[in-house]
Image (cartoon, rainbow, N blue to C red; front, side):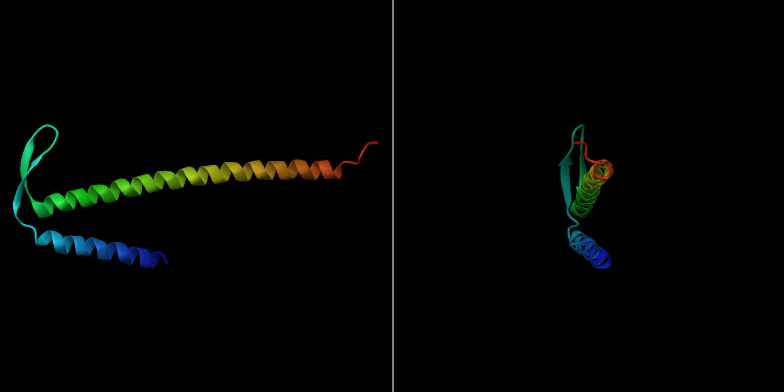
Length: 94
């Protein structure tokens, strides 16, 4: 399954490169402090790469958060099961 995912990502990347190579016209790009003249393919590549990296960072952070929550809840369940076993082992006082 991981191989299939990697192949799809590589195919998308190569498709983006092929489409970007066809866009060689110069465009004006105004950014926060200045402006520049870039090739459209370069600008598209930078935007695609930045989006890809930001997306992976967000997914990674959410994955880590889920793992920490899972570990914390697993410890809590283990503690409660231990307490339950101790309660079952004690004789009932009447």
